[in-house]
Length: 384
Ligand SMILES: *Cc1c(COP(=O)(O)O)cnc(C)c1O
Image 1 (spheres, protein in one colour):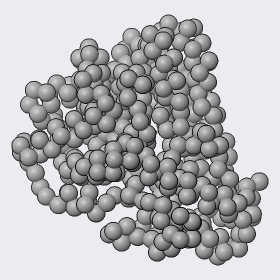
Image 2 (cartoon, protein in one colour):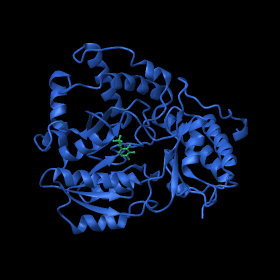
Image 3 (cartoon, protein in one colour):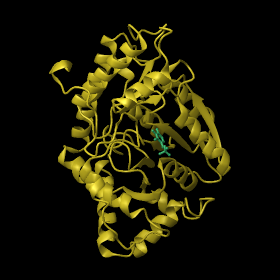
Image 4 (cartoon, helix red, strand yellow):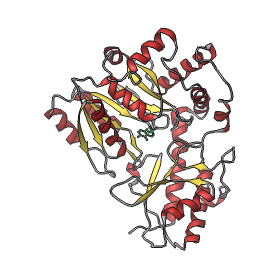
């Protein structure tokens, strides 16, 4: 279908709110929001059953039900990443972080705070990790016990080659931790194809729930061996899991409404065809967005082969009439919220493809881009 045949730019979610072209929090369905219109006690069997269902479904999405267990962690995604590192990297271990964006850097900052030894293998934000350098780093430093890789680096939108990374880490006899926050649920990842000791993600990205719950899929044996490792009480996944296994309950107040919304969101994920169905819609959103923006002269940071269908970075146009704040405000006034750039390598802005959006919404966003460009007097989006 041609872009022009799609719905025009009267943007609003089912609740009349602007559409969030941002990578989480993102636009959720009305039915997901409605799932929160109740109160549950934290010991209520209805809630406990819902919680068990959600955690089992998460393990199933990674086809990891026998080897791994999904451990929830209250908070945003970073809480889950920090809990994963705190629990699974022992005081005697060392974490090698593959850095090509802000989330890799954040993992290093977490190590510094936790007092865990770390090292970085960095590539520019528009380049995947160097696999030969990874092999060398693992061969050269026997102290490295774990490697952390970011599945989709949301900073740029790059898709890192997680299976190739996992194969090298496994071949070197080390353990892999994955930050799959912005990919899990839309891009496939399984321990069979990409052996991982643990993977962190959250309720509010490709699963299209609301923010407030992170989770870590942990290898059962590794989690059992990690009892007492974490230098934090609230972020101790081994302790969290021990309590859940024993009583079915959280140690501390669970984000009940977030879990109720996630339960509904996972039902809608299954109805859409699971990971493949969700991924297909995002790929189509990304295609419409990228083709449309290129037709207007904009340039993506990444070549198509490196682009994940999650969020797209566009270089800032060279036309001096282009002003990001006016661009942002003009799109917001038309019902589309976008993201500023987060790059160090180039001036840029970002538009997300995830959430309860389809290609008609992306075509609407493009029509709004036309209107705002005309308002600013910018003829084309070409960068320097
Ligand atoms: C969103 C995200 C996180 C977590 O961010 P929060 O703001 O704490 O939810 C971590 N890693 C990646 C790659 C992300 O996209």
